[in-house]
Amino acid sequence: MSQKVKTLFSWDTEFSADSAEFCPVEPFQDILAVGTYQLADPDYPEGTDATDLPKKRLGRLYLKQMKDKSLVLLQQIDMPAILDLKWCCHSVQGNVLLAVANAVGQLIVYRLEFSGDLGPCLTLISQHNIDETHTLALSIDWSTRKEFCDDPMIAISDSKGKITLIKLCNEELKLQQRFPAHEYEAWITAFNYWNTSILYTGGDDGKFRCFDAREEPAVAVFTNRSQHSAGVTSIHASTRSEFTVASGSYDECVCLWDTRRTKSPVSDLNLGGGVWRLKWEPGPENLLLAACMHNGFHVVDTSSSALQNVASFTGHESLAYGADWWWPGSNGTSRIVASASFYDHLLCLWEFSIN
Image (tube, rainbow, N blue to C red; front, side):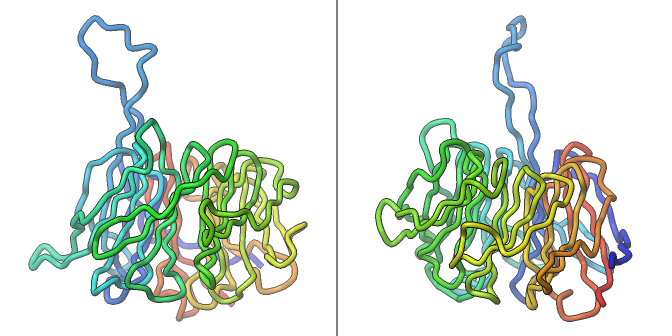
């Protein structure tokens, strides 16, 4: 049964919005990071024909704070266009960390600090270029969603179909390895949080893959090239069920997998739009949040054998790209979600009740 959805807040991000992430670390769970991506005309001398010149990819990182079910702007940082951002789920040596992937192939890590009367703000601590040539960093994941670690791993997928593994050691980003995973863009990578030597990847070649990074280069554990009929764009592993992984694709389907049997998924559901992002709810992990490009945002109940769409938010008028759960919300009878869409450059906060 579909649940009633209520819009709490909306805000114009100016640049096209593609990612939104609530901080999972107490006491900063009211902090939201928002990433944007904007194409702009290049700078060129007057009289130059700019028709064939590449566009500039501009980005802006917003830091916002939720107060009374609204969002207050704390900070904004201009940078190259942002493709993805993720908070580390645990503090690292006392630091709350945010990783950002951008359009010039950089992994950037910020520390969240409390600056007196100004409140929380982000400070740059380290950055790493994954490639020397024109490469977009497309997605990132931390190894720490389930287990605490003082030297966490970060995985980055890129536009050349490769995966880069970085270890954060005492605020220094150290390259572990970079290996080919897909023939075209590697849209997504995600850790197996039960064994962080294992990585899942999805690419524009339609393949859902798994790699063991204990070898160098990483060794493929399995490849499913038949289930999704288009590029695999989103993957998220469960922290509650060791062998459960969700995947989504341009083919508009979300699939739930048992990674011990990967010839076909346990269940699947067509959501009517390319599934760009998937997020398990914090805590119970019965619900799966999906950003579905041309068809808005949806919440899928995975608790029974048949996946069920139980809530939908259609308050955006453009590509649905960014979405995340407000972490404390998993303890009550309602859920709060932040969502971000592209061409209408809109950030929304919405709420729905659960049975």
